[in-house]
Length: 596
Ligand code: 649
Image (tube, rainbow, N blue to C red):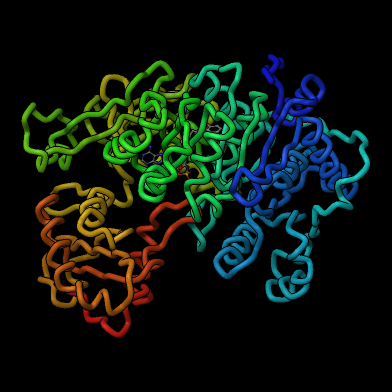
């Protein structure tokens, strides 16, 4: 199953797939676990993927769709992968999405369709009966859409209708996972897609017996560009399951890692927490994680405490903590920006002076400093080969020295060309240069993330838009959220944000921003009623002690109160908007003003 060295220079991904199908037709390409367990795996070789994706391409070509945008709205699975490569092979631009089932998914799907105005949508046959009503309800943007259902009839005979693709042409429009109201499509060229694979391969090296495993949604950057495309580019097998099956029972992820001797996998920080808390003791001895060599952890702040708990629980089952790779990236840069060096050994963590960090200086805390006065930061590693990261003062746009917090700016071949049909926003986000730099320098992407560089490694501290400024100190909501969630096992998720001081009933009319905590309580209304008072006191005490600020409002609600993106990130702005317009979920019978 050793991947053959296919010449990659100047080739696009669909061309690489074709070469793989010729040179290693019988090699396993994808193994899908339809129910999330290892009981009924479905395997596709490179020949299978080649055939299936070619039939999709042929259908698109037959319909005259070359050069057009095709929304890929299928459930996670093998047909999704065939659809993706079929669209690329037909010379179309793929727009990854999910099927429009359910209110939220339909809203987001519609947002994407209205923004990108596709010529076709490749979606689930179960949507067929709903097309007419859907078009009648949303006439603008859907009128010219051709609906294509990849059923058996589509996957038939085999003829070759490959369209040559040009590397500098758009291959994919990636919509970010958060926005419903104002979707932004990131335009990625074939060059971007290949570049991302190449730099990740350079970063991770090439193991002869690599096997990947992913339960990530295939319509977001990490699942799509990080796992599916990387596997085809490298020619090694990828074991996939649906994110739904992972979330229902996270043991399935570890079971697949064990069963298929997986060497490389990936997940956001929350997945590692979930694995620790939800795999029962009695299941532990069915696990063997000793084949794992590279375990990527990115897409949200990487917590040293989480990784430590994961190590404690799974090191006895063969997990090697040196395999973890904290990493940072974003869809605007196709995916990958920084990661722990492959030869990096243990993760790099720094204990920093909390008060200094709040003023923008990353200073190592003196040995023996009180834990309450320090923050533990995990390094996201070194920048991808061929790329450059600079940390810039977001107001003056001048580069700041190492050890100072500023906005992370990135340049290099992974960086997208801009947002679809948004020239002004694209220029402001993608076409900037640090103040005083040579105009001959390449332009940079402003990531909107804050971080600092220490000894050549990037530490991400938070998002510029989320930072709360109280008395001249920068507070990072995710740090406050950790304090909230540590208070009680029944508090599972929280969102922290600020509102102007004069906007709150019962709060002093000060100029400062007021901190609002929204938290989910896992229990019934009456259980909540019995603990509410104690909970309020505990959360207030913890936040005040850890961050020197007293929350003005604690809003508790049932699971679902905190708004999330489809990739599992907290949507602080949306939660704030829902708080302000009174639409947050709450324990109704008990709702008071919430002021403390
Ligand atoms: C970030 C994606 C980074 C993201 C992933 C490399 C099988 C298994 C593994 C494998 C191959 C096969 O969140 C991913 C690099 C994966 C290699 C896998 O290899 N994109 S996003 O556009 O949805 O969001 C971007 C934002 O997320 C936050 C930042 O705000 C960023 O702007 N973010 C982080 N925040 C804090 N710390 C981090 N490490 C963050 N990474 C992303």
